[in-house]
Amino acid sequence: MVRINNSASPSDVIEVDKGFFYKELEEKSSRRDVEIVKKFESWVSSLPEEIRRLIDIRGSVHRQRRTATLWPFIEPPGYKYYPFGFRGDGTIEVAFQWLRKETRPPFDKEEVREELADRLNRLFQGENVPEIKPKGRPTFPISILGDEDIMNEFHDVFLWVIEQIRVR
Image (cartoon, one colour):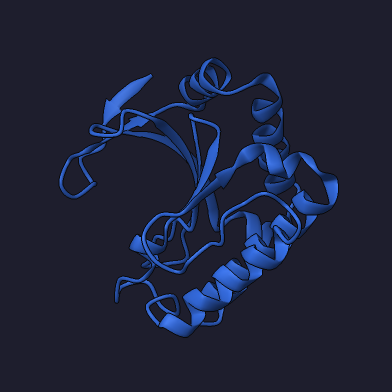
């Protein structure tokens, strides 16, 4: 299913269902990446209710990039955060460009975005991944989360992001 997301500003984003995203990911990347993202989704569904209820995983396609992305939105009352997105090209995007906006505390503070970048960089030590900088939309391969230890550390980073949002 594909439908225009009228809540986006401006309407450059088309909402898509997860099936659309997974089909694109398998076609443009690999079955292994599909399994990795589904494993992340399964982990999210296993979180305690007080955390899980804040997370809504949705798909979208940006009209200019034409790549599907699966976003784990974190939505406490009155806010919408999307710190990471699994892209159909086999990468994970870190959405620093959107986190830095003044409407997304505490990530509107540079030191908090730097801490997130540092946590990700520690996660990838020894891996062939360019340094994550706390600006723009840096990416890294989904396949790196195929390593069980790195996936678990990525979970910890995601939980840290949620905790920062909850105590803002």
